[in-house]
Image 1 (cartoon, rainbow, N blue to C red):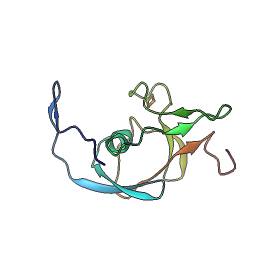
Image 2 (spheres, rainbow, N blue to C red):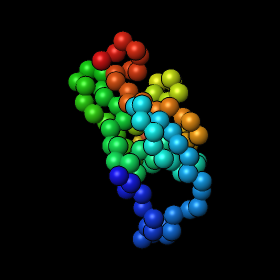
Image 3 (tube, rainbow, N blue to C red):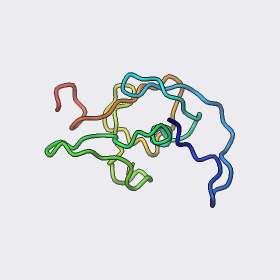
Image 4 (cartoon, rainbow, N blue to C red):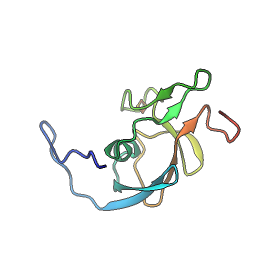
Length: 106
Ligand code: FES
């Protein structure tokens, strides 16, 4: 499923950029080079970035400008990466974050 917007009513036509591959929770997905990680995930229908520490509630895109941390994910083994402001890079490994992102967190 690809939900990428090709022609936005305000922003116009989608910018041209090479498509690359990243991995999300073990599955390969296509991304547009340089776009935010979260944009690539949303275009594939992924809306949950992390689960909260205490209540285990799902979080995803909220502010979209790097201020709220609801989009925090594990990127290339590093926890708490704000994916709404971090550009995708070829071969990047992105994982849903549970709790604070440690291996023993649920
Ligand atoms: S959505 Fe708020 S920091 Fe990314």
